Image 1 (spheres, rainbow, N blue to C red):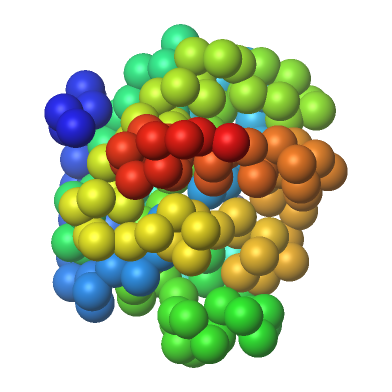
Image 2 (image 1 turned 180 degrees about the horizontal axis):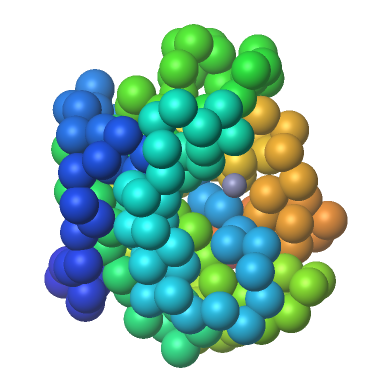
Length: 191
Ligand SMILES: [Zn+2]
């Protein structure tokens, strides 16, 4: 499988979105929605980059990032190398399933993919879907993961309403996982 086409626009190392810490061996890929309808992958990457100008003394400082952002046209922007920690899934509480697979700090061993969406309902464009499947399949291969166990929603890790469309349409998430499975070539019968 070819490596997907990725626009590599790495964030500056900074405490709020690219801490520069090494990931432990990757045990999962977590998908998110960007929760900002109509915005592009690059705009959201630039938002993560802009977090660096916050003050460390600000108690309301935002810590956020993800390794990849898949845009409305299917474009993929990479914000962090896949061997560094991103701040995409941190929370005070994690689900028992997430703790059992990822331990007590899932950011340590997961790769985050943010998906853009045109509207509030969070539904993804066909272009976003195809690129996200291709990217997730590539990551499954690269880290030796099975889609059935290696692809997670943010919701499954922390119960956050993310990605909204997959939370409200669990069958769409199952379809996504199946598409990734097919794309890895390990399930040629499809479904
Ligand atoms: Zn999320």
